[in-house]
Length: 262
Length: 334
Ligand SMILES: Nc1ncnc2c1ncn2[C@@H]1O[C@H](COP(=O)(O)OP(=O)(O)O)[C@@H](O)[C@H]1O
Ligand SMILES: [Mg+2]
Image (cartoon, rainbow over all chains, first blue to last red; front, side, top):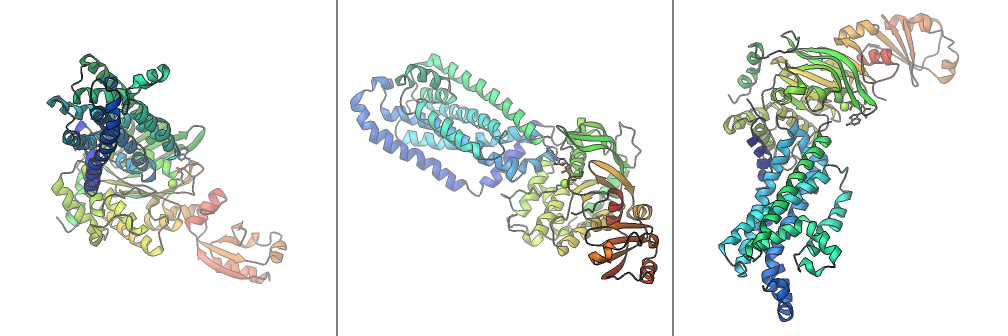
């Protein structure tokens, strides 16, 4: 028996999460359908009707609904991934000790990390697929290129998942999570280009916003959904997200290992 | 295949067939060998240079109070915790380099249950089988066998959380057996269980032992050590202070019998060492006096002869508790 030697072994960890998810997936899929529907209805259509009368040049010539839809897709992936990287991971590290149980078998810390990332990828795929369908219902995508929004949104979610997992692995309890949502996730949601272009921010803040992974995620998803004109910026956003996720993944591995192997 | 015995019995030939490749200087029947094994957490030394050998087929115990370093030792053997220094070989392999291969051949029952609370009883076993790369069909057969072995077949599809402490413990034991290990590490297998649940666990462990599985058990209960262990080491303050079978240890460090006396404070104050002559050794505990003698009744007669007023007297055989008291000056459970 050579368990633990194949990279596919990490899929066991993914499989474990899927086994649990089997009982709850219906509610979760419904939720991921309803949330964008509500947001796009209220903000995109409702609020957007005011904005149309004002200034669509700032939105690159698109309607507010078109502008908002893909941004929300990227933001939703960030939020789900951030949540999944906090309480559920903490539970497996210390409250329920699932990782301790798994590490008593031939599986190792990198299997945990890749397995969880695999699971997150699955969740992000289903969320962004459902979300994209909602965008289609609202008539937002302009070309089949919009399908690329799914991998782009997954990459955005993974960047947050890995970075926050690295943070979670250093925490003794859940007290720090409120701060992560209050000072990182929510401000990014509001100011990283989901609801309005970042060039509307004061210069200093615009610069800070443009350094965040959500800014690049939103820009990339919006770019492919609207087949936006600034094609040249796509590789920059993509490269940023890949580099950020790689560093976050490495940090998640080191912190998780330090926490679990001692 | 499903009746439990043949599959569990298969562990024995696997052991004797010489599957152990031994890069270290281990004799074939030594499953675990530790020399100067040490574990440090920063400035704290949790395990301080311990030496021991565990042989194939025996039940080996670590007896010691809380904080003695038992769990730290077990976690090093389980390849869950890297050793700080010393030498360790487990099933003939090196935990530092061959952790995953060693783990494939071990069963681990940790001190604190870590069952998967989001899965059912059966799913806990099936999922664990997946971690060991056991294919679906044999995993299902094995899980059914093991549920039967730990008497949880009727709870197979229940969630884990509502199970009693004893049931969870048995499920953890079943889970540790899913990969047909030749060596099982049990960290305080019955701590926190009521007497009935305890006996049920002990009974399952006897059966495993009689099938040739090697057991390593930590405990701070002297009765558990006496019941289960062929051989044990007494641990205190990160060190091994004695080693032997329960009987050898009692013979070496205690007398055959013990006379337990309860006296009034006034009597105690007026003793002036008068008890010293009636026993080989006297231990003054806060609530009683222990007199160590080969013949407890005879010692009691001598005390009566001295006309010392006694509140109550009890003659019993020496236990490992007495050994521990002798070695450390303290009782096991404070
Ligand atoms: N992860 C850890 N970090 C720091 N100290 C630890 C850790 N684990 C155990 N210790 C310390 O090591 C000593 C031995 O603990 P342990 O091995 O759990 O003893 P036992 O199992 O005999 O009760 C104790 O003083 C304990 O506080
Ligand atoms: Mg312990």
